[in-house]
Image (tube, rainbow, N blue to C red; front, side, top):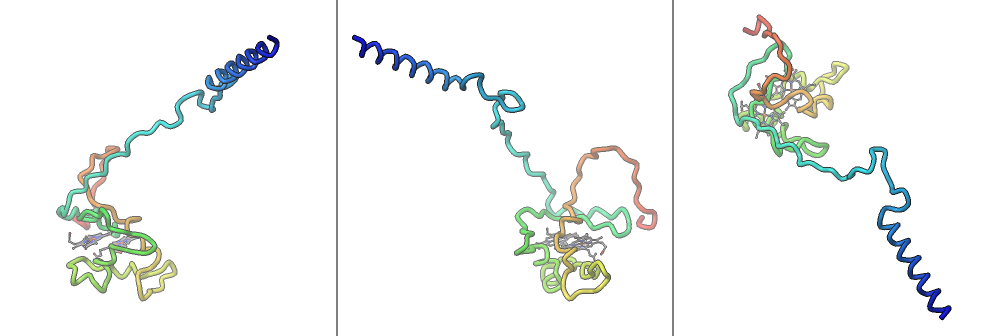
Length: 149
Ligand code: HEC
Ligand code: HEC
C-alpha cells in the first residue's frame, strides 16, 4: 500500500515538472525585446532592373566616372577574377569592342604609372555603376557643367 502511494506521488511530481518545463520554465524566458519570435524573416528585395545596353547617359562633370551602359549581373569581380578587365583591359578591349580603361587607372596614389591596373582601381564598381532612369530620392536642381554642354 505504502509503495503504491510513493509511486503515485513520484508520477505526479514528474508530470507537474514536465508541464512547467514545456510552459517555458518558471517565469518563462524572454529576450530584451520581450518574448517575440526571433526568427522573423522577409523575402529579399527583388534585384534592381538595369536596362540592358541603354544609350550612354552623358557625364555631368569633368572626371565623373562614366556610368556603365550595360548590365553587369553575374560579372565576377573578386580577388580571383575581374570580368570587367576581361573586356576593358588593354589586352582585350579592341577585340571586345569595349572602351579601354584610361591611363589614370594605371596610376597609384603616389603618381607612379604601373604596368597593370592600379590596385586602387581594381574594384571597378566602387566608382562605376550601371545607369538607370531611377526616380530621384531627393529633389535637386543640379545642372551639368557648362563646358560639357
Ligand atoms: C563582355 C564584355 C564586357 C564586360 C565583361 C564589361 N563590359 Fe563594360 N562595356 C563593354 C562594351 C562593349 C562597352 C561599350 C559599348 C556600350 O556602350 O555598351 C562598355 C562600356 C562600359 C562603360 C562606359 C565607357 C564610356 O566610355 O562611357 C563603362 C564605365 C563600363 N563598360 C564599365 C564596366 C564595368 C565596371 C564592368 C564590370 C562590372 C564591365 N564594364 C564589364 C563591354 C563589357
Ligand atoms: C576610384 C574610382 C575608379 C575606379 C575604381 C575605376 N574607375 Fe574607371 N574611371 C574613373 C573615372 C573618374 C573615369 C573618368 C576619368 C578618367 O578617365 O580617369 C573613369 C573612366 C573609365 C572608362 C572610360 C575611359 C575613357 O577613355 O573614356 C572606362 C572604360 C573605365 N573607367 C573602366 C573601369 C574599369 C573596367 C574599372 C575596374 C578595373 C575601373 N574603371 C575602375 C574612376 C574609376
